[in-house]
Every structure is written in structure tokens, then in C-alpha cells.
Length: 257
Ligand SMILES: [Zn+2]
Image (cartoon, rainbow, N blue to C red; front, side, top):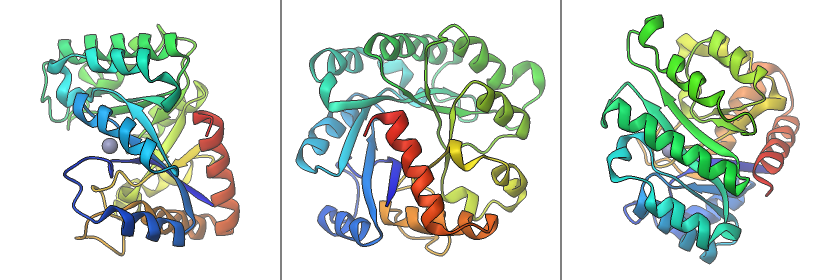
């Protein structure tokens, strides 16, 4: 069994017929999927979608790209639909695109971390650095200084593509590391991905984005978690069943699913 811990197939602009997508996931033994909210609308859609499809689970959050819209809907969903929500996210800081002013990103991020603590839910973090991540302006400096104010948080660094130093810090803080299709084609970071302990690894597609090899150029879907799992099992010389079991156990543990 496999779990796709990060996808956006619940959004109304997802282009593939959803019943076929869920069938192919089942055939690939991807039996649980987290539908991750990125803004007010997407968070509401995640909650209603997960009610209709029992293999899917909802998370709610406002992505750093959308910080200027505020987090009122997230707060509202957490107070009215808490039992249907398994995590807060994806939330964080994005200094690569800088689609929202950084100060607003930080404020909205911190507010949502407090909501997660209050709700007792884990967090799905989206943290992306500027291109030249010189030490003083690195997104990680801001991220860790905010993170350390919330010692009770658990969570996952989704789509982690950064360096070994930040990986080690994340692991020492007990965070899980989200690995997706990028790891099947970004050859320059293989050494970093290879050092992630399987006991801390979560698999994800980020569908419809980041389609893994050998499906590059097509719309991503949860079934392809299997290809990501096969890729890393082969690199590590472990059985697919072992990697699938351990990463699914991690997902169950973090998200209580
Ligand atoms: Zn995403």
C-alpha cells in the first residue's frame, strides 16, 4: 500500500476525469490521498471532495503565493469542520516567486501555525528559497526562527529540494520530508535525497504538477506515487514493499489516517 501525501486533484480545474484517476490510483495500490488546500477556495473544495471520496483526506491552508487573501476561511473551516481535516497546509514562505510581500507571508504563516497548534493538527510546509540563497537572506533563516516559536508542531517539509544542512536540521526537529517527482529527474540533488532516512520519508505527487519520470509532459496523478517509490527503492537497494510499508506508516503516524 502507498499513500500520496500531497495532491491537488480536488480542485475544479484538475483536468483528468476523477473516477479514472481514483481507479488508476487503486490499481497502483495508492490507497490513500491527501487533498491539499492552497487558498480559500481550494481548502473548501478539499473538504467537500474528501467527503465524496473516502480514500481522500482534506487539508486546509493558504499558500504563501496567496497570503494577501488572509486566512479567515482556514480559521472558519477549522472551527466548523475540524473532524474532516487532517492537517493545516500547504503553508509557508516562498522567496523564489515572491508572489506576496514577504512580511505578509510571514504574518499569515505564523497565524496559521497558531491555528494548527490550537487544532492539534500537523502542518504541511511549503518553503522555497530565493535562487542565490546567500545566508543572510535565505528563506530558511526566517523559517527556522518562526518554527522555533512553535515547539509543539509536527509536520512535513513538502517537496523538499534544498541542501543537506537544512535536511539535517529538519530531521533533528522531528519533521518528515516530502519526496516527489522532482527527485526522479533533478540529478544534481540525488545525494541529498539518498540520505533521507526512510523512517522520515513521505511520498507525494503534487499532482497535477511535477510529473515523475517516465510520464514527464503529462498531467500528474496519484497513481504515479508508485513510480516515485520504485525509483527510490531501486536506488537504495530495498524492496518496493518495504519502502511502501514504511512511508505509509509514516503517513498514518503524522496525519492519523
Ligand atoms: Zn502542492
